[in-house]
Length: 573
Image 1 (cartoon, rainbow, N blue to C red):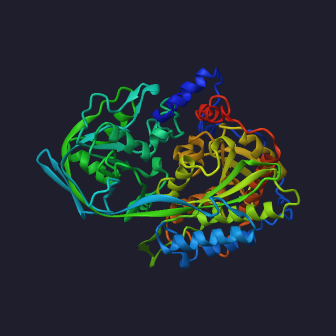
Image 2 (tube, one colour):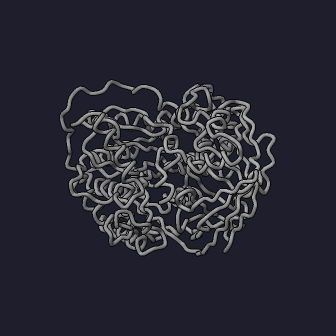
Image 3 (tube, rainbow, N blue to C red):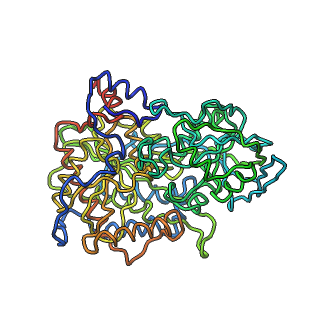
């Protein structure tokens, strides 16, 4: 069995898996993404059948148009946009005749804290007889999860710690020999083997959980650091600086914790690559040389001989957001559950770009919610009702760090041991029918096989996600379910247009990621071709139908780091 990619929080899972006697070398999340397709590409270019199941491009367009309208103000939690979006979703579920999912209510309360940070307009880096002034938004984005009106970072020594990773299974420790208590740690984005620069490190091109910003903040806190700053580099990040600005400015949501965030580092943040190069130059270092060193085994971090001074002024609000939950009870095995998930939230109202300040989130993720409602429609219209119960879960706070899905996974309404699978939708694309079905996290579970069967019905082929360096397996709500052992499927058409080919699909994807992702321009366009979105929704509907009619539960494949969690949760079933 392969466990080399596991972060510390999954080490007990791996140990349990070893004790269970699994000997496979099968892959973990995204590992297979570097491999070839699993079956031959279909040679036809005909349109796929469109059965009369209620899932249509027009229905999906109708729901996107409502949820992504300016009236919904970008659907940020704790705003009028949340009230409208959650009421709309609950109302549509009620119209379909679905039952409320949480003790007679369509709403599961999710307690959160909103911290609106107002960093100083400048931050000062001083030392070595030099002083460097950085500008907020232009050079850095700083925030905090500590629930304090003021967080002051004064003359905090800066330490460069490579990627900020402690990974015993890789014999890698960027903190070895470093004393970072009370200091601010500076790290590179992604993980060693950054964007595939060295395929022998970690998982090469495929990002592991060590590359995620959440892990880096947590690891710095475990070492007693006062702050953690990530150097943004667009290529390994897979998104531009504008996304860092739109995602980390203003109000940020966090789970409510008993210690009010005291266990977190006081300063979390990002600096541009240009600012980092100027900082290293002030320290008498060269960025390129440090980058190269940080990507070699045995790297040793170092104090930079510089210190950081800045202040964050915070407004703190405690509120409760909402997951929307509806259920279609099963006919014969109603105590077993299949979950369809999509996040309803987006970024709300933010800095204006080209005169527009509403971040509508049409594809991200009004489209997923539209898919949720279309699939619910199909289940209600189906002549044969599902034997297992179907749960429709629209979650809050995905854009803030998978908050709503994580809360559900930690406070499940329906027992996890009886939850068959999660089928997640995030960004159903809008450039027509596709020939591929791309599975993010391919190779993890038997849900791949269910998806392959459904893809064959549409004359499509299955491939792993083709850009594993982005860490997509860790970036949407299916991951919250995987962490607690529930097999999760995250799949859609992405890489080959049925009508226009692969180059067209790649161009459209890159255009969205570069120009529209987390921008006000992600808004409904009546010229969209939503046949591909309907195609994906229908495929996921068929997966759910087959799961509902199958008496067995889908399993994690041998070698998956999530298998032992599942075995433990179901041992007393």
